[in-house]
Image (tube, rainbow, N blue to C red; front, side, top):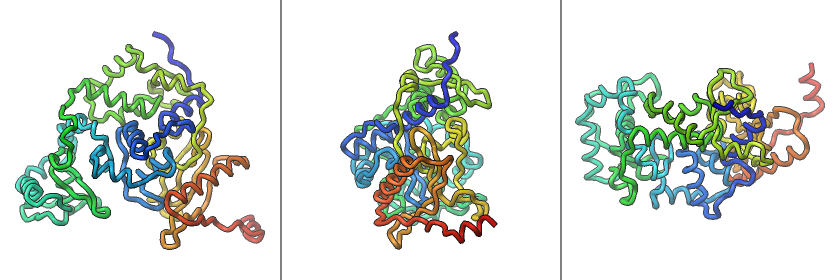
Length: 402
């Protein structure tokens, strides 16, 4: 067996950025709907999160790759054309339905305490289906919970959210689906009234499911170690995953590589297409990334590939924060060069830049590129102005030096 291909730090970063569709020469379809679909299909999912310090994460993930786009195109894909589904706090392309059906089978056995709660509340479960069948799409607050036997118990924020939890568990099993939204409130309905008639109706087997998930993981990463692949193949049976990776290597679809920083000595692979980009002069967009962006979602990978330690400090006590409540990593020339501490003042309709934290001293050109990205972000979130902190006075500097 040939030795793994040794990758430099620069090559690993270039591959990771290009695989995340953040290369400067990434081809964006002219139509906003097609552009959005291209991104979501590439990653397999687009994560949702309600935080809106700057903007909701799924909208930021799209903006980082597409620039300004028509948000109505996303709503059209979801609620009119049904080319995307809202499922388990993610947007998922409709063509992944066979995989969702596969996952709907074993999920309940991995959730401690859920199976018993569902059995106890079987009558409540059945009554929800009957109410949706008779009344059409409903918000959770509009569902009669009189058949509930035992409430949902949790040490977290879901405690006592009985109807919502039941709907979410039923949705994991594809017994109900989100059919729309009224404001931020989900509308629930029966799958046959949400899933288009021409959608794939199959259910994949273990080997096919594993092949699809490994392929999607490597498209997403370009280069990845075993732990990273496992995060994207959660439902693949343990015995099937190594067989799938071994077959991909034998077929030339994965190539073993060695990474410059791999402290846990895990085996790693790259796709042939990614390796072909390793020594290219391709650079990245200059943009900001959501804290949940696919490029940096895995914090360990972010540290190992980019030598960039990132933590979302939203849940850190204010006095213990190093960089800010909701910082956005800054991407430039295939490097993570710092963090933008910003928020939107919606009352004043402004993007507030609380601070820019650099990893190293930026050149004047880099500052201009980042300033331009700030203006583009302000335009995207609908801010009419950018408010920056006042530069420190001589007295401020003297005070800090004491």
